Amino acid sequence: MSVRDTVRKAWQITQVHLKKLLWYGFIPAFFSTIVSSVYIAYQYSAFRNSALFSPGRGQGQDVFKMAKKVWNVASHYPKVTIALIVIGVLIFLGYVILPPIFRGVLISAINKIRKYEPISGSMEVGVRHFFPMFEFALLTGAFSITTLFTESSFILRWWGENVFFVTLPILLFIAMAGLIISFLFTYAEYFIVLKGKNITKSIMESTILVISNLRKTFLVFMLMVLIGVRIVLNVLLVLLIPMLVIGAASYMATIFFSTYGLAFIGIFAFAILIVSSYLLGLFNIFATAVWVLTFAQLHEKEEDKKVPEPEKTETEKTHLTSETAA
Image (cartoon, rainbow, N blue to C red; front, side, top):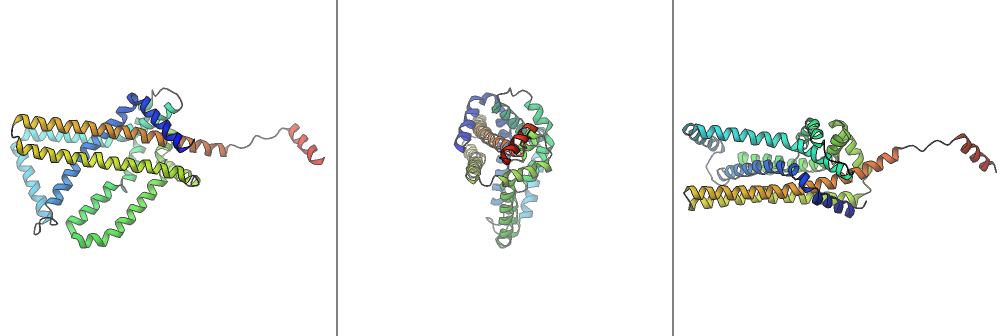
């Protein structure tokens, strides 16, 4: 199957079975968008109040001032604080627990659709493989763009530009190493979910499968382009849209100091959250379908290579000997 056929079939699966698969892509994207919005707000506030943009202001003092403000608000509004803490805990649990499960469900469901089987039982597969998928997410998350950006921003805010430029080669090396590792671990999740292998075995099998198919560079390149597009969409939808929501909410808050204004801001922010989560979930389903189809094709090809040729019978051996002698 060519790359074009793989992409076309993946998009057909996404369109035809969208109602069945949508929630498995939408719900993780929903929690990811919320957490990303909070993360962006934190980074924006941290940079704005740092010594980079406010000379003479200490980063440690800002942390203590922020903590003091939070404590004052919490002590004056205990019920609201408790409600926010409960909501925050639920969002955190949804962000940590649900994505590994739903990732496994999505991989299993698309693989069953590929084989023209009902997707019933996919939820059980996702729950059963939660721990290895969670461990794999932690392993690859250490080299993610978000992790590197957090480390870079921390160094830049606390120790200044000089230290940042000294450590920049190390950060770039980690980024390149993370890119190579992510490339070699491309099929690890699919070995975990579809073949039931542990995380160590899955990583080894994924590395072997990638290396043994290096001659299909064009196929891998095109698929990596798809993943690159997904990353760009993540940046645009998960980072840019929440920033626009925060900016619009701040602007509207300066105009409307009434209940109607706050309600409008809340409805607008929630609508943007739903739209961005839907688009992210849709693309997540499509990208997963592309990789499931590619994994199935390459793995089946490797398995066919391992099948030994059937032994010849005594009659065939005798006939072959006679032909050789003649």
